[in-house]
Amino acid sequence: MLKTEDQIRRLAALMGVMLMAAAEAFAQDRAAAQSARKIIVSIPDRKLAVMEYGKAIRIFPTAVGAPKSPSPSGSFKIVQRLADPTWYSKGKIVPPGKACPIGTRWLGLSVKGYGIHGTNNPSSIGHNASHGCIRLRNRDVEELFGMVSVGDDVELVAERTAETAEIFGGAAAAVVAATASVPSSVQ
Image (cartoon, rainbow, N blue to C red; front, side):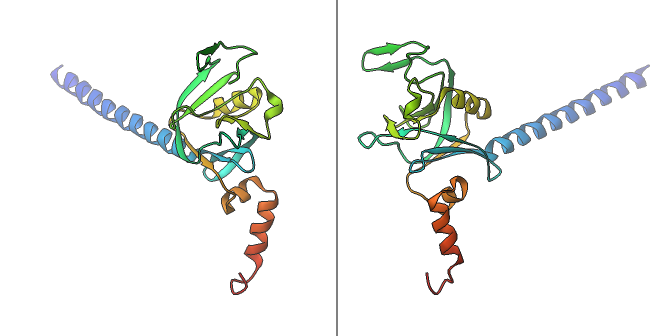
């Protein structure tokens, strides 16, 4: 009887170690997947890309900061996710609903006062029209909301680069492609 109890204890200890190892592996896989996901916003292109493992899996049109209130540039993180947010500004409070200027979702960034959000003015998408935040149509921000997590990286890029040209295409991609095909002695 004593031998059987000892075997059960050993088996329980072994199972505990195996479960701990599996939980650690799962946590590492989840962390790797999160670090593999990133948002890139090209301010001049007024577009947002969700990137996974270096590839754009979804691109959304955006509105970015107006000339008098430009969007910040740099590397940030998502620090807050709110569904049906309330908008607060200089003594005004607008509850969730059709009149809410930040739409149906808010993804707060690690730069105070800025985020990625919806809008009650979808005609502003594609323009430099916000107070510095990144605006999306409500249906787009709802889709994005389901794709990202707190802690995901967000890169707000102020000027066209080879990377943004490759991701978003357009005239910048043609310029990058043309200079890539010119011998280095001519460049």
